[in-house]
Length: 88
Image: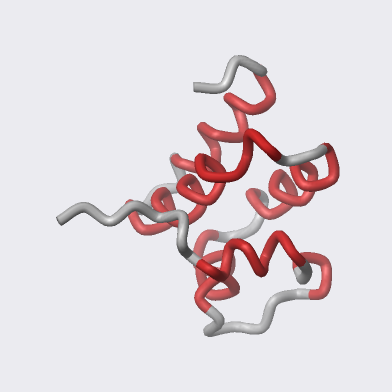
């Protein structure tokens, strides 16, 4: 668990989206990478959290075009989806 209040808040918001799928995708991305992000990356993710889950998931899955403001290495990492643990 993160000690920094900002990281705790971001982590909570990322993993309590309203659907299990969004919780796993968005929260899983933060859990896997958030502790290593710099200020710019954290700001990018905080802005992303303001978007609708269906949009975030569509961008990450490649079913909708990613808006210019979210294109780049962070979205590329999210689109890899290699951070979501799958239980048998």
